[in-house]
View 1 (tube, rainbow, N blue to C red):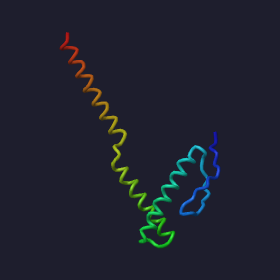
View 2: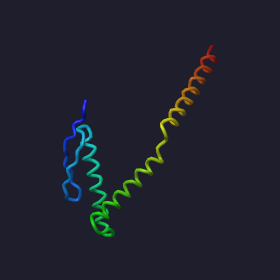
View 3: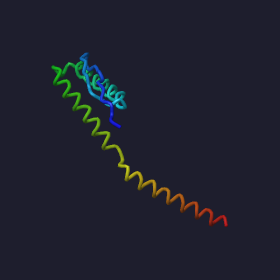
Length: 103
């Protein structure tokens, strides 16, 4: 089944942008646009960056930095699975020992 690519209107710094987006991703797009708008407004309000293009680049750099920091903090799934299997094995061994002591 083909995704519907309808246009979605978002507003960033009072400017309207029309973006093609699958229906199931519209809310995420709107949330991303609102986040970008907040970041850019914060940068503009600081008064340290002049110009819309520079403001957008600074916001993109800040968001990229946040993303990279979050990615570094996330434990890879394979590592979590390995730890869970190890923990499960230890629990099962302890339960076996406990049941053997009760006999």
